[in-house]
Image (tube, rainbow, N blue to C red; front, side):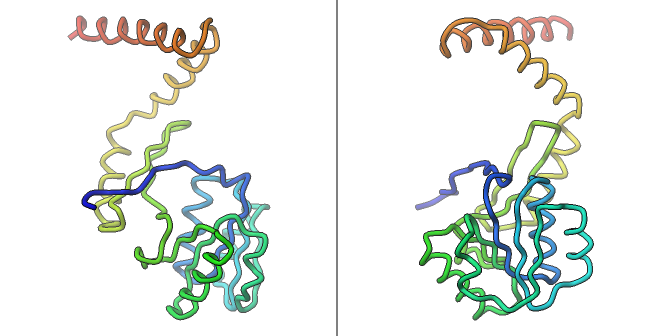
Length: 197
């Protein structure tokens, strides 16, 4: 099938256990991506060698555990999600097979064909998160789009989100009625903005 067939989801990594295999630069990149999006994520990093930067990052996050040893299939027994970030292609294939045998979703660094999910570029403004996917075709384009959106979306949008959330709590009725009321309110805002031009 043509086009991006990925289904976008936002995972509650603070309620899941992620096992990351790899403690080198690629492992650091993946760990950083996880923690930037979910500072309370519970992550176990398993690697025979762990670079200093991974140790330094882990020190800032109490839910990150470092295990300095070679990977064993039993390392995935308590996992909910797996990230393979080793520089050993054969080991990455073994990790993937072990994850699949346990029905776990896995991301294999730099190998889109071996991934069940990708760690996309993310734009964050307070509670607003926008994820960008190129279906594994071009991380560079995703990165550039992230830069454009970071510049284009004002930080004040988070204040608007908080105000809309507070307003939503005051509305009465079922879901459909609340949506109708919010549509009326936002239509007035859009109409007034148009008149101010």
